[in-house]
Image (cartoon, rainbow, N blue to C red; front, side):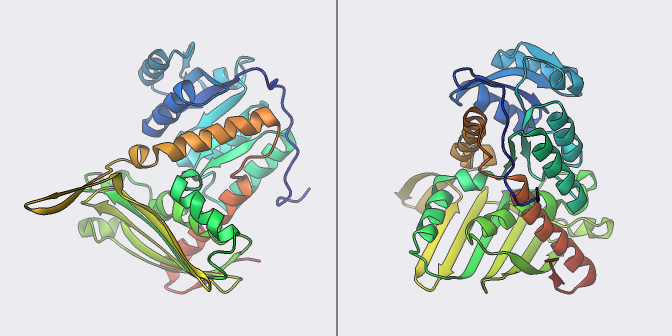
Length: 351
């Protein structure tokens, strides 16, 4: 079977039973996902929390009523009471955890990036295919109502042939993180990778063929000498002729900002923004609108949607909506962007 073919999904979870889920990683995103599974996803049950910090695992499990809290991942993977895992551990551990979970017969939802090398991406995809498990990757924007509606309009040919695409991520500021604690190339592998997937999602059927990237430390120029990058613009050319840009910044003082745009021969669609509600206040000092400060607030509906889709795929014995191959494509753009920054030249993607 080629890596591009959808593998058949084998499942021992009866459709009438809840899908029993364990989270691996009890940090910010892990806690968010665990709470959604425990309280908002139909047909799912949170049964375990694993984290190397025992206190974190115990606190989250107690808050959400999960019967097992452990510091050992093997306790989750060997348990007959666990059908699926949510992998929200540090990014560099994702591939090994996917492979181990697949070998144990557990369905996998893994946060982006699924891998940081193409070889590891292929290893994760192959492991899931061999085990016949559902493998879904956490590209949440596909499930945000505006982004989903934009894709529906594109599928309905309302935009015509895509010509220009744009996707951006601006993290809320002020930036207070220690640059020394941020792994090199994070802006491409963990931030812009969302935008790379969005561009592919909104240009269905097209393949990225050339990438050019410019990046700098404009938020923290004092950290540039250590390799820190916090601002970037990437151009992506597709084989259907479309030209796309992705941009990111680690510090938007007005809040968390996520947007996309597709302009084509028949029209244009836009999606996203940073507003926490659609209310605008008009007063003596002008107009005011509240903005979201956290991704878990701005994209809450999308997080619920992606985790619901994961559980639905397990119960229906169908492949995930967002696959390992989707993750591999986004990663290939990210790695090409890194090479482009290193060389100063455009990079052609392998065919």
